[in-house]
Length: 325
Image 1 (cartoon, helix red, strand yellow):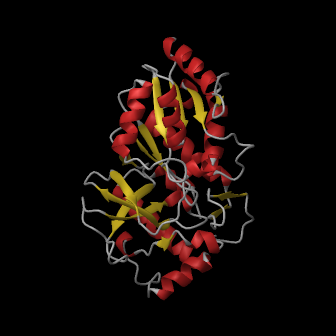
Image 2 (image 1 turned 90 degrees about the vertical axis):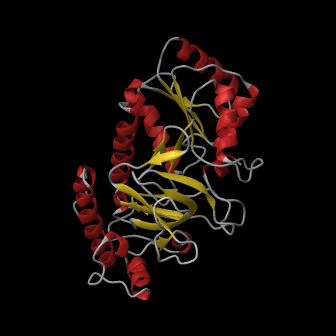
């Protein structure tokens, strides 16, 4: 499968063409996905458009090896989980494809990573081996080339001093962290940042009282003295991320798309603006499964942007915040 075309997508027509090509590839080369499709009566002969493509429930990554093809696995990313819970495993055949995806996506939304100092309120790469988020942030830290880029989860005092000094010097800073760690920082240290992007990556479950997005972002804006809180939407089972640059409205890179399914009929898609379960098309996930039905609730808008409302009640506690429990 030629993966270079994935990142050349610049029209809806090209996206549709590539999505159908990848569906056919995964149907033929992914036994788990093919069995799922056949159970639904879907084959390469009757899937004619993106709306016909079946979305694999994300729970399959907990019990099955979801791989397209026979190439050796480069790395296995694992989700965070509480004791006794089964975690997702994403077996990645082409690690360079993941790197291309998040590097290109960052450039699209934020520009050259070398313009930033990257400060992370996350466990370091050695502390949380197997996290796709930590792998990405570790690489962004290295790519930034800034001597003070690094992981600061256990050093809030040092982080405050570094943030204050860099911001006063006019240096562009990306502060990225799990939501509860950012909230603890905001409640403990008052800052007034002018050149810093504050980006949260997950919820509060398992650590503190769950806050709705508006509450969380209001507290973070107040504590850090910024006008907007940015967010990253990604997960272990994907190789692409969507970003919100404020107000909780996410946008996807051109090789990623969000659809919303009916909560009562998982095989029917919701209309624009209606709330339902989030289905993700991630074409960078070509060697696994590009069509995933998540347990998140949300709505999609006419311009393709989307909002995450919450999760289905029966969903497991999961997310980046569990990495630091």
